[in-house]
Image (cartoon, rainbow, N blue to C red; front, side):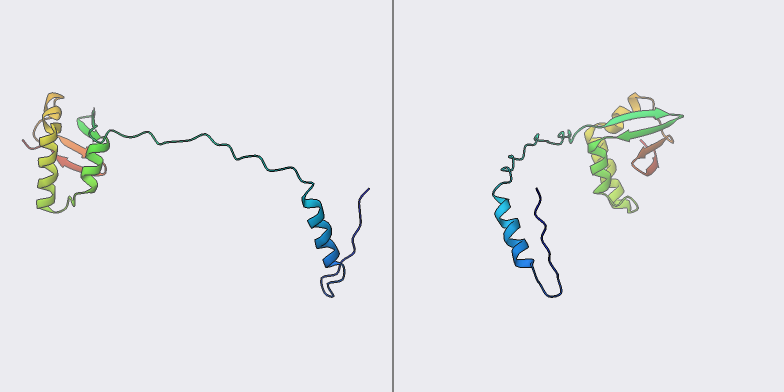
Length: 119
């Protein structure tokens, strides 16, 4: 029940018949279904959130707020680092660190930055 077509690419013998045969059979194909998908949205992060955890005397500050703050700062530069610390103080992070037991000389980590707590 299948039709055999002979073609040759060199002389193009039978190529037109092949094209016509394929074109005539396209109308017999089922209509494509409408593409269905489930809409996905990333969970919006709270830009003010931060978390403080302590392990072996080192305080880790994570979360959207401090990570964005650290990325906006050039922390090897004194002025930029001062700006970073001011923003942390204004946001209440330094106060929260103290409430959790951090004191002068303790190590604070934000992303890959480590610095000493100085009040």
